[in-house]
Amino acid sequence: MDLNLDTLKREILDYLDSAEFAVFHSSPGGLEGLPMVLWDTEHHPDYQMFLEVAKRSGIKLVLFATREFERTDVDELLAQLEECDLTREEQREFESRLRELRIFEGVTCSLELAFDYHSRLYVYEVQPDWYDEFLSVEEEVVSRLAAEDDTDEGDTLPGYFSKN
View 1 (cartoon, rainbow, N blue to C red):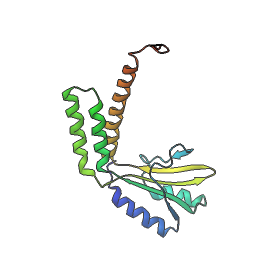
View 2 (cartoon, rainbow, N blue to C red):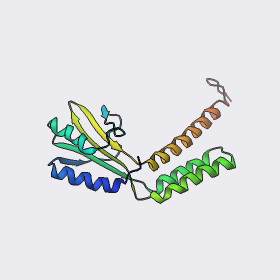
View 3 (spheres, rainbow, N blue to C red):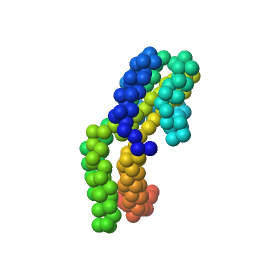
View 4 (tube, rainbow, N blue to C red):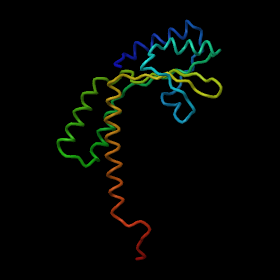
């Protein structure tokens, strides 16, 4: 879904305040590696439904995190792209896709709400379609780099070394 997360961010913060939740401003992506259950935002995008579940469960504290898309996100990916062994056409296609995403610099690209219930985090997470496109390009570039690393390692015989 192509959302304006900047507007949604303000709306959610106002709602959290009016519903008298305590808000803990956490770091985006800080929940990775923890046991969590993700809310189905595709079929149930209403954050108020998610927060109603928290309220009915007796939750008072909600984690809130957002992330802005930064110039360095694109710059770092372009630098990684330089390390890939790509044809001229592939290189241009990736660069073009990334240039198109520069218009979103400074825009909120990820929003997370979460609450803890019986040692499990329940998470509401949304990101716009354009950020999904960025993540797709990033995944393609990283997989290309990994594939090249695998072929580079295949040039030597494992377990053999020179005693010179």
